[in-house]
Length: 56
Image (cartoon, rainbow, N blue to C red; front, side, top):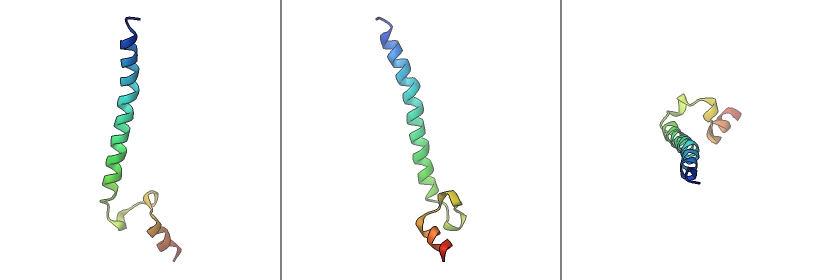
């Protein structure tokens, strides 16, 4: 039982740190994608406005 704290801390760090990093990367990517000019946006980041333009 004396090593239980180390075991829990190891799992918490091993799962928690990558999870937090992934959230930070996604939030930063979302923020940066808003700064891309409309003409330079790629198809994967298309919005409803681009879909309407394509249908016209």
